[in-house]
Image (cartoon, rainbow, N blue to C red; front, top):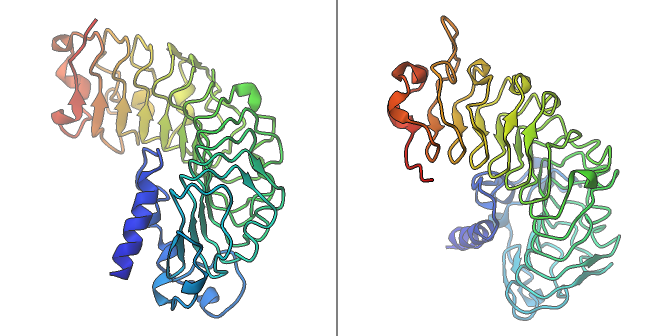
Length: 369
């Protein structure tokens, strides 16, 4: 029953967040809370060590804060109307859930002694102020969820052990240079839902980061930022105000395999701009204002999924998706969406989709003026 209780709690935390990628950095799929690093087991001090909750005897039940639920190394204090971080939290705690409260400030000693904390959930509070040393004790913190709060800036002095930061749906307008300094382990940042404009990113704001995943959706971007980490595998810029993709906009991001640009105002994609993405597997361009299928798709040998629905595309050419002649795709398409476009689908030649795995992978029709 213990593992089932823990799984239910962590699954609830995961589902409370707005990520579309359910399987990425999800607590329920993260071995960090289910396995024990050999170095941690031997007692050595390392930020990469992860605790085994099931192997720890719950000897600190008397330290559980009033109204909270404590089990093994998990302390759940959500939905209690708390105005401050509670005291009497065991120093062995690895997961602290404080979401859905009324906390407005994180003070210097709020997390004092919690040197084993692995994940901290502060979603949906009223946090607007964070002391510069509030996170100093959290030497092993890897996951910080501080979304749906009132922050106007990215918290200073984040723990160097941090791997994942979710800070979406705040009031952040600026990402200054050096704010992520020293975060060499950072892999994933979700910062959508903030009123960020292109000018809000200072040059060098992401210097030193080796991110794989970045989402800046539901912001105020009018173009693709050009100074993001070049290590990115996934970049999501959906629900912005991007109007065009120019030739060198994607030059820096040659390692992308998933690019999300849906729900923008894109009318034009300059010829050759997609050629900088040789490993791209999934491209989202739905809900834009494109009048044609973007040029260059046949040259993307690994591309498998293309979302082009809800645009203004009126014609689909026989070579818009597949290589001509003896050109070879290394991976066939398994998804092309073209529905809700004014395309007379009965005029599209069957050979247009000669490099698609199955005809059911093609979605047409349902266009309404």
